[in-house]
Length: 586
Image (cartoon, rainbow, N blue to C red):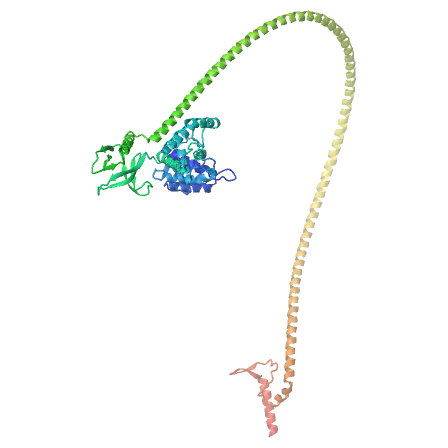
């Protein structure tokens, strides 16, 4: 699984590095989500978007950084891969993501499909370090395979010149440079596009799809015992057979293991070039087209079974591993040789340094001897000069001492004069102390007088404070009475305001009543004018109709139909009037 993981990681690295970067120089989380979802789809791994969100709280740089996309890729995708996926589909998805951005725009002699196959082969042959490159030895191996598949001769001298030019500039080629190299036709001159395409496809089938051998042969059926032509594909642990070489209609598989064996059969039933494949549960009879094909198939199948028994990888993978180990061995030997050369060079440099040190020591010794002789002569001259200088110095010292004695005498006179001045100053100081003592006594007398005055002032202050307290109490009583009068005044003002508001309200009500009275008065005048013409006539009748006038304050009579139109007094007066008129008429 480790080898499978490394192969998957190379294709994923191409897809990851082709993603667009944001302004901060990092891949956005949305692109990582899309890439992860596509990887899970083609690898048949359940996708967990929540884990991606939890992992990428902050974006980190690099596909293989400790805190970037690589830990998530290992934990949630690559560790869950079981191998039950289509490698070609997986590589095609990664190719789709990176080809458009990196593939050369210049015209190539190979198609996009061939470029894709070269890209997959690059991932298989490239070194296991990033950024991915293919070293010159693997380039030579691949070009040889393609040249052999085309049936052309290998041009070793031409490649050696190319290899020398390549080694002077860099260690190897990237995938896109390898595609440009093969697509340029530099090592396939004279070959048409179809031949190159077929050669690339053959190498792709062998290195990537693990196709060890393929071709048409006849197979005998198990039930009807008839012979049918099938396209056989031999892989490290299985032989698959199809209707045709387009691999669209698969008819079955022959599972190979260490217990299988292959045997040649004599010609029979009109079929030639027969051989037999024995497995645990089935036996398959196959007829090749000729003896050469028969022998090739028998050897290929037997070699595959032997590899399965030994647990060895396919030949091309084993060869790649051996080439890689050889390169590592050569690199280790080269490094060891360089180390030894460095050690020899260091030892030589140390010897040179030692010899140089000895030479310098001899030169230094000779220089020291000459210097010592020079110093001896110089010391002798210096001693003579020193004696002469010391004599001169003694003379000068004697003169200086005489000058110092004279100076000391002068300083002594000055000192005595200073002592006399100090004694005089001492006497003046004694007199000043006596004056200060008398001043202190006078100050004590004044202080006592001030203390007595202060006591009298304190007594007066206490009396004044007493008067002030009585005055404050009187003021407080006056203030309380004043406050009470003020409160009464405020209450009266509030009552006056209420009375004024009531008076204003009554004034408004009076005005409204007057307005209503004026309206009623106008209505009454209008009604009086309207009834004036027939009022007199109504007065001569006996009371069938009675004018509506303001009623009496006496209580009204109540009839069966409600309040009566006349009061009792009006009714009595009306009766007396009727009686008088009746008597007059009689």
